[in-house]
Amino acid sequence: MIEILASPAFNTIQDIGRHGARRFGVSTSGAMDPVALAAGNALLGNEDGAAGIEIQTFPFRLRFQTDTAFALTGADHDSTLAGSTVRPWWCTQARAGDVLAITAPRRGARVYTTFGGGIDVPRVLGSRSTHLRGGFGGLEGRTLQAGDVVPIGSSSRGSVGRFDFGVAPPDVAIPGAAPADDRGLRLRVMRAGEFDLFSEEMQATFWSTRWKISGQSDRGGFRLTGGKLTLDAPVEMRSHGVVAGVVQVPPAGEPIIQMSDANTAGGYPKMAAVIQADLWRLGQAAPGSFIAFSEVSYQDAVAAMAPVNDYLAKLRATADLYRAL
Amino acid sequence: MRSTSEALLSINQRNAPFVGTIEKTPKISLIGTLAMLVEAPGDFDLVQQGRIWALADAVSTWPNVQEAVIGVTNVMLVFEQPPADIGMLGASIVELWHRVPSRKADGKLIEIPVIYGGELGFDLPAVASRAGLSERDVIRIHSEGEYTVCAVASSPGFGYLHGLDPRIHMPRKSVPSLNMRAGSVTIGGMQTGVAVLTSPNGWNAIGWASVTMFDPQSEQPSLMLPGDRVRFRIDRVEL
Image 1 (tube, helix red, strand yellow):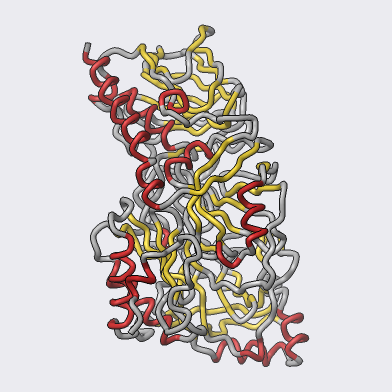
Image 2 (cartoon, one colour):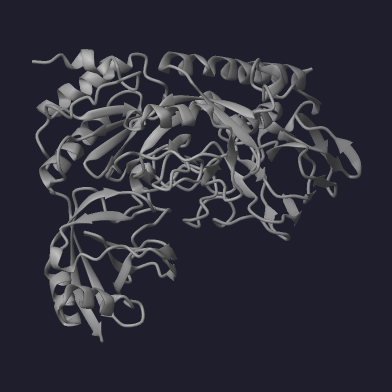
């Protein structure tokens, strides 16, 4: 068990998401940076589907009620365990009574805490992710607050071996994954259904604009400012399914990128979709930061996942080896 | 016959033609590498919607398809992995589209008892006023209709219902009501529905029903499913 001591707002239990329930109107939820969550689970020998805590407001503090191995991944930040510094992208053994304190990131937006054995809340529709709008999943379908006691699973794999090692974060380990220049984060996208309805001028604006992620952004979606994309003639779209990463353009012209908690349906013209290999990077982009889009083909978008998958596979193999030493 | 495969090879590519808008072939487009949207050609009607249901039923069983997400005369396929041959997949879908018979609205009949008007049906006077009808007439027209669940989307268990009498169409509000109660029976444009969550809502509330529309603990969590039919019954009128 762990006890939450401080959690300002919007910190939730998340796993890799609730897949297969969109047809019931249920959005997937799930970690905004699934690579960080997967890395945290791999460091501890947890299964890929184990849930952790997604922390996006700080300072966050918790107390371990039992000896527990844990890992911190995601945004680059400072933490202390019982007063001593613990590093991000590192797994550590905590003793009963230890307090873990996590402060606001230097870079990036979301920190993930994973625990050996995973968080042991019931699966709802196949997932432990918190569905805030629906009020289910996670801990009673809500955000964490001080005083909450969160159960941790017991796993033979997750509770034995050595826990004091770390790995290089993916934006260091994967070539080209770090923000390359002062224009901010460059994201690879594929064109989507209504791209061709926009004039060449509007398409050029889409590619050349340095978009700012507005303050009105959350796990549901990122609103972008910095340019306007308008259609010569408005189109009426019928409501249809959408997935995270889709870049929709409402009539006012400022694009919205749908994220983990996005509605299952959309009806605005779709300009593009951020590729899977870059969604985790976007999940770490903070409001106020800048992004720009580059076009890739379907084949390149598929191929771009290979370095991400390789990174996680190597990480898991290395961690398994280390724990067994 | 125009070669569909030739057209499909250019999905989402530079200067892609609008596949199918000319000759009644669905428009197929990708949303990234893990989702494909198939949109029926032509105007909305229940025959096209029925073909979408049938298509969704069939493709749900295909390997690598995690689920088929039905929309209003469209369906989005979500994949486990990026498909190896996207052109071939698109061609198979077009071929199936032309072959599959439209499914009738052959689902279950759901009867929903409604308390019309009153505190939770606070927009009933506005709907009546716009329609130039009495509130009782609005209630009669709404409760005499039979509605079809086209799709379940937007909120958990929220059914897009077709079949609202045009006399009581009512545009959505430009400023949503802040805390509309779950169970509110609403009219939004040419659609009617039952709000599943208590939340801001731009539709017009004409009544309220104490029906559990969604139960996340159930394996089949949504009361309404595409192809179901819905009738609203007058439980009580509060004018």
